[in-house]
Image (tube, rainbow, N blue to C red; front, side, top):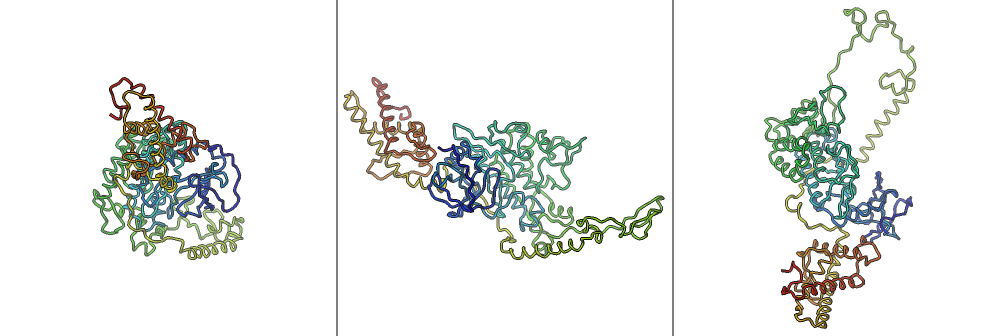
Length: 624
């Protein structure tokens, strides 16, 4: 059965074959060389848009597999459109001959991405991501907030918010990974996220066992604000600062617990770091949101801005940007009277955080900072008026200086600091010279695999109703089941017609005084069927004006998923199918259909018996 996975065999082949749990497809997996604490990532040779995460044998626990099934049944709406912004599971994969023994899951593949910190770290961005501007960082922060909103809108909590779980591209698109660690709730049970990085954990959760706490989106809002702060403040953590108190400076998580925000209005034993950009460079509306998160939110976590609030504020700040007249790569907020990036480049002696096109073409962005030559030091011995140079005489104030031959043998590694002092100088020189030749040669040979191009205009995740639409987007595997729904709909219509005929015959045989009409009976059967499947009375009616011979009523994708999930729930409650409900198999022509017909008939007959003697023609209150 699912969850009782006992397979501990280690696959030693380079490629392995598995079977999709829902689709039944046979897939060939190729090792990608990426491995973590929970499992390994494999390429899917049959579909280049997918990758598979195969758990280590000791990580294949029943709770984790049930959590994955809950995620498959209720995927969030991906705001990225064609480019996946949430690496959500699309199917489970199991052994080739025993697919019920689940090994891992499939998820979308993302290419040409790198960790988020590469973009907000000035040194890495200046050297490897050419053409990136502050406008791009602002758009990337907006896209990240939009993804958080999409996850929260579906009832999920990310939990372990940190920069390692976020990948980004040079077009500012962002992708959340490691989604199987999210906190997931299926309505009856909550699968918690028991991990978290201290630098992104809100103060109210520090010192607590996260395995015993149900998190909320309020907790995610703290981590989201930290990430946005780092994106807009050159990688500076919001609780980084110079300690002005006594003793050793507290650790970062201790500052978070104490609420010591160096940029806040309250007094704090910290002041901003000198190398950090001025907080006043940010748009005033963004400054207010950060203070609302780290100051007011410290006292009352519910006051932290929502992800949608961040989206709206970042969009307004983006609309108020202006471009520097000296360097068109310098973009800043309009409330400033002069370009802050020009001042920052001057502060760091020419290291421009956003180098211009001319600087990139000349290679100035890679050159080290020129240091002023220092005058030779002098050594003062004895009288302050006596100054002797370090080099020259063999004696200094009566103290003999040993010659080079008298110096002891030194390690070869010191040759770079003291040429001529090592007997292995020739070998060390050859190694260094070889490295200087081989490494550039490898770069030239593999230059076609390296991307030195300037990124284009940043993509924008669509906003508006798409983020809050209740209609789920089916995965590629679910689309196959949805395509077969017309056959299921036809079987349900036949079930309603046959149950109505059976009830009409039974009531006529009883000879009751005032028998309901055929139309009333059919309406009661449909309402009772929805009750048995735990559907809302206002859910889409598959049977309105439809008979088993008439054309089918069109049904949307969301309503198809609702009806199919209702059938799964009923099948699990009656235990009609020997296979677990996770397989998605149900048989309306067999035992499940017979049980539905029996339950519907019995419920209507009981209700009619209770209604006897009443003048009310309705059977259920929601039909009035």
